[in-house]
Image (cartoon, rainbow, N blue to C red; front, side, top):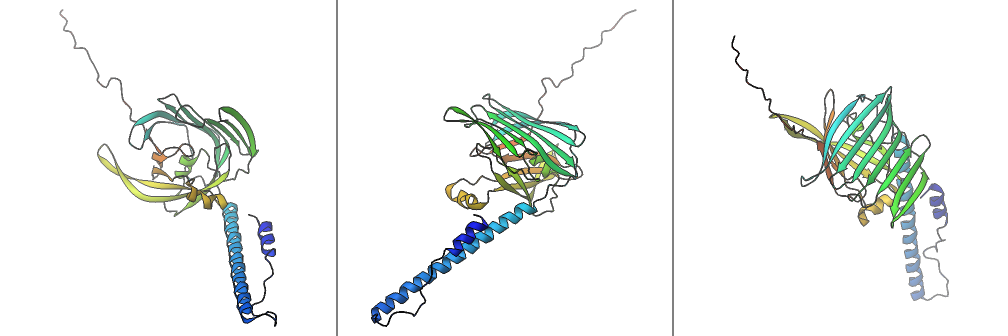
Length: 318
């Protein structure tokens, strides 16, 4: 709903019949009926006005929140790295192994997160972003295909052009489309883990934008808030990580309807070890719309042979 629609709706309210005005020829029963009808009409008009004002207020709040959104400031610059990951169900069953690989050229970072599933499925997302004072999305390319993904899709986002290219399968037929979307300056596509390492745990809530990677991309808001500290152990030593909650706010009429019709995406939880050099530890969330909640964790390295075999020295005689 926009301001013009709201204004037109307000101007279209029917004229009210003033209470207490009626013809002298009307009977007392007719007078009571007229008063009752006028009263009902008045209540309906008041309700209409209040509903319209509430909608305009909601619209104004949404617009202001979008306009005031700022990119996340760079507190910890990203560098060259290679992380080894595993993807598990909530029950703990390993379903895929993955890599998080980053390369840096000047202020530009190329980050690729790829998972190879046991059933042959692939989740591969490559994101290019800059880190000059603030983090800024440049491009994002996502591929999801295989049995683990009921709706195979390939999405490419070009932030500078405001273009989203989608290649998907619908009813067994390939569909290719290009959508023009206003990619905001604070877009977090492919950068959630990076941004969380740069958000202070002292902030009660931080909001960023995201373009949904679906056949019909749209702009949503991610509300990020730090939770309780959760203990974990390394070599018997206890440490604590911050549990961040990432909530999707759809906004508008769709956002109000989503929880009712069961379309509200579940929250994502990400555990970050804060400090001088924050690092990712674990996350729980979905990889696609309507998908199951999966857990991403750091991989445990299993060596093929951990023993060091040495041959006994042979005695020599002279």
